[in-house]
Length: 247
Image (cartoon, rainbow, N blue to C red; front, side, top):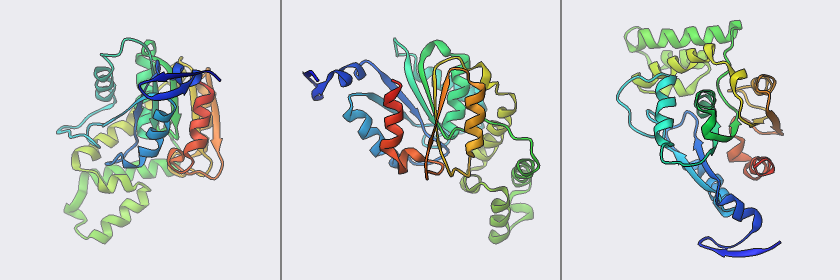
C-alpha cells in the first residue's frame, strides 16, 4: 500500500483518508474520561482527528438542571466551527444525546456510532419500579432516610449506582433524561448508523440494541461476545475494527 509523509509520520492511503474525518465522542454517565485514553490513542494512530467532549454536569461543571434539549443545543454549539459533516460516537447516556442530535441535525453527521446506548424507554413493571425508586430518592433524600445503609439499599433496588453518586442537580437531570426517552422517536434517525453492543450488558441490555437496529432503517448491529456495558474499554480493538469497516 502506498505511503506518504504527513505531520503524523508515514501513513498509508487508508490513514490519509481518515485525516479528513473528524470524530466527536460523547462519553456515558461518568465523572472521568481516563478510561477512554487507549481508544483515543488507537484512533489517532490511524490518522483520525478525534475529540472527546466533556459533558456538562459530568466531566464539566454545570450549575443548573438540564433536559435533553439543553444537551442537543450544547452539542450544536460545539460543532459550529466544523465546516463539514462529522462522525458522532455516543456511549450509554452519550448515545442518548447523540440520537436526539442526529434527529434534529442530520445534515451535520456523516455517520452515527452507538455503543451500548441509552434511549429506549421501558414500560415493564421492573423498569417502572426503578423509575419510582428514582422519584422517591429525589423527593425524600436524606430527610426520611438518614441512615447511609438504608439509602444504599434503595439505590441498590433502583439498580443504578450512577444515581447514588450524582449531585442533587444531576439527580434531577438524570430523571429528565430518562423521561425524555418516552418521546424519543428513534425511527426518525436517517443517518447511517453503526450499533455496537456488549453481549452481557446489564445496564442497557442487548435487547435495546436490537430495538434500535429494528427502528433505525440504515443501521447495522454488531454484538461483542463476552463484553458488558463498555466494550470500547474491554474489547477496544474489536470495537474499532467494526468502526473502521464502515468509515
